[in-house]
Length: 193
Ligand SMILES: Cc1cc2nc3c(=O)[nH]c(=O)nc-3n(C[C@H](O)[C@H](O)[C@H](O)COP(=O)(O)O)c2cc1C
Image (cartoon, rainbow, N blue to C red; front, side, top):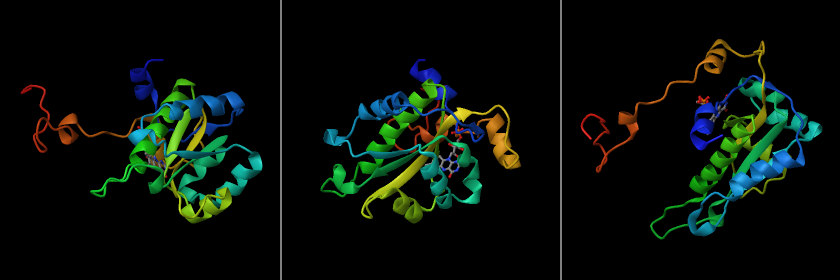
């Protein structure tokens, strides 16, 4: 699968079905993150792969009802970092979230290529999740990613809106709304370029 196809194929589906997590899967996803670029090659990303059934069950207390579709995920990846693990420039710029985001994006695309759904989520109780996963208090649990196979049938508990987004990709901004040419505020216009 080429990158363009993986980008197009990737979706944050919520209808999930279990699959067997192997060492190979963990290695493949990890290696995609491993090769990501980072500021001064600091590699600030840290991940916890949760695949043990009991640990996944225990983790449910950190998920709000709105994200109960993720109960069907065979793997939850906790995405963790901390500012001191990455560049902090004199003018205040910090790079850990950016770099960890790139690495996680690579991981998500590799999961897509492997035929899996990798659905990032911000909806969780960070304090409970950190306690359950033994994440040091100074570190940020940036995101969790629910990984599984895509189920053909929607679950009863998916709301109307969630079923809609299962069937149709949520709309995106036009390029002219977020791409500027030469100066901020000069929107990209293919006819004028
Ligand atoms: C940082 C982040 C947080 C998200 N949090 C949630 C979440 O808590 N629950 C959920 O169902 N989807 C969550 N999503 C998925 C988005 O809703 C989804 O990516 C977006 O609607 C676009 O749909 P698509 O990824 O299928 O193109 C999150 C995505 C990102 C990147």
